Amino acid sequence: MKGLAKRITTLSPSLTLAIGARAKAMKAAGENVISFSMGEPDFPTPAYIAEAAVEAIAKGCTRYTPSSGLMELRRAVCEKLRRDNGLDYDPSCVIVSNGAKHAVFNACFALVDEGDEVIIPAPYWLTYPEIVKVCGGVPVIVKAEAGNGFKITPAQLRAAITPKTKLFIFNSPCNPTGAVYSEAEVRALAQVCTEAGIYTISDEIYEKLVYADVRPFSFAASSEEAKALTVTVNGVSKTYAMTGWRIGYLAAPAEIAAAIDSFQSHATSNANSIAQYAAIRALSSSDAAVQDMVSRFDERRRAMVARIAEMEGVSCVVPDGAFYVMLAVSGLYGRRAGGRIVRNSVDFAEILLETAKVAAVPGAAFGDDDCVRLSYSLSMEDMLDGLDRIDAFIRSLA
Image 1 (cartoon, rainbow, N blue to C red):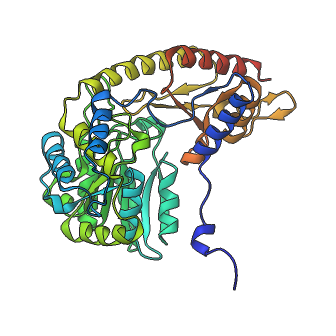
Image 2 (cartoon, one colour; image 1 turned 90 degrees about the vertical axis):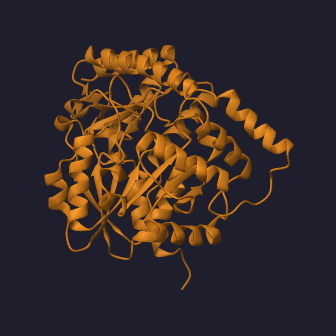
């Protein structure tokens, strides 16, 4: 019988990419659009990292590498994990991939069988449920309440576990909420997972983008038992403004890493060789450029939160990490914009883009229809202009 495979028809398109593409198309048509939609730093890749790529090209480092990545890069990842996270891995347990998203997919593909349940806290990065579904799994969504800082509790996690539960997907610092779990909170969740004997994918891609005195804690560092059940995912995209370079990595127990390496060798082979050399330089150098970027993000974060506090009918939880704010807009539902009623986050985002020329991502994409996500990965000037437009839009609702 002709037709698409069932697994591909389960997927929903990315609303973040769709909103971003629509905003870009409006800009290309000459409209003055301000976009809060995209999830990437607006800073250039640090020059010393880019220079490493140029050097690699000059030296002819343009051939295949091992499917799991250059040994030098895997060793640099191991050193980073020891230095920053207190985790000891052999390079054979590290797999370099085409971005952290690819690493998450590889881990799910290796661990999730048809019908397996995968627990995902909401709000979640919109790709997690789609990856689970395409791997044959069943997403089980646990709502993290705004009143608890968008964090789930051990009791919530324990209540969601059934005999079919195979995996827990954990993301701290979190996209889209900016929530960062404390060491005690991570250890408590890890204890639940080890007692139940379920695996965890810990997505730590925003690890270095934290503010004030907040410090993230790696899930696998909770205990040796937790480490034996955890796949730690990270990469260079967010920390080093290298989104387009497409280098992510994971560290996992040896059996899981070997299975993922075998799969990746058939699916994609190695990640870009030139980008791998750039990633070695990124992971092996001072984080001074990163700290400068974090400082500027923090200025925007505080300015955004302060401006939102001046608006009527909306609110936000102050984020501790990443570069997003979840703007609670459900108090505006039922009000009218011209002839249209704002019924949900999709309506809010669509009407906002059409009338105020401001792009935001509906919270429905992240499993929370009460909010829209605003990224502060844009200039301070544009950000404040966009927030003024949002305020004016809210005031115009009848």
